[in-house]
Amino acid sequence: MSKEKIPVYDICSLSQDKQIKQNDLLAERFGAYLNRHEHSLHHSHRHSFFHLVLFTKGTGSHTIDFEQFKVRPYEIYFMIPGQVHSWHFEGEVDGYIINFSDNLFRSFLLNPNYLERFPFFSGISAESVCQLPVEVQGKVIQLFEEILDHTSNSRDDEMDMIRLLLMQLFLIVERSCTGNNKKSIPQQKQVLLRNFRRLIDQHYLSIKLPKEYADLLYVTPNHLNALCQDLLGKTAGELIRDRILLEAKRLLTNADITVTEIAYHLNFQDNSYFNRFFKKYVGVTPDEFRKQLTIHKKISHDNHAKLT
Image (cartoon, rainbow, N blue to C red; front, side):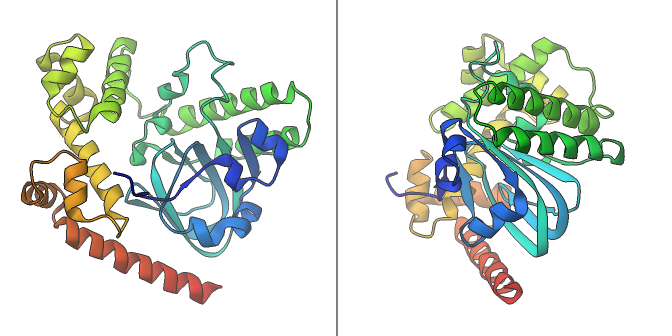
């Protein structure tokens, strides 16, 4: 599919700081960032980088892969490259924003996939948003302020300090937001599930059956299915199906791509089969889903115009 599906922003296009561009990192106060980009970023878009925002002031909503969350002070959210989101704020909003590329930690960590150990970098919207407990709010603010201080210095070792501060931030958020509810899961099971999810992201267009993924993972289909049921309460087939539906929704945000083209891109036999599949699990047809997006977009645009 040659048509551009959804606007994709990289760090260079969002940054005015040459040094930050060179280091694959952008860190600044959210109010200043929003003032520069609000008109373009309030529509659905993707990032080519990891993205996190801590709100300290403001109300409204932000939508990540079609799941909407309320904006609240001391709420922090994380996104991985490729996810689709949009902002819809009410009144003045502030906080901190950090964008960083996949390369930032590659030469720093022995395990190149280390960030996947954090639930909020799973790419699952419900796991990527956290309301910070009162007891850690001051510490998290301090970490963001220290990161901002280090980004203003051009010394080479400043980037290592930023990496350490970011890792400290990730560990605090993981402990604060998942520590009490996180059941003890053997490392082997966690790795297998992460690898399964990674394979789905890579092959969902061409590989549809759990058995085929089980073969790639050197486990039996029954073992893979039991693992998904145990850790997520879903079957392996449901995870594959959910990824296909997510991509279908993402593609439907672009009015220039027909439903038939989307069905073809997702390797459905014909358009009618795609329509039945989508309606069965989403509750509406692809065309109806697209109309709902258009109406929601118009309402958001009208509300934004009133506020500005």
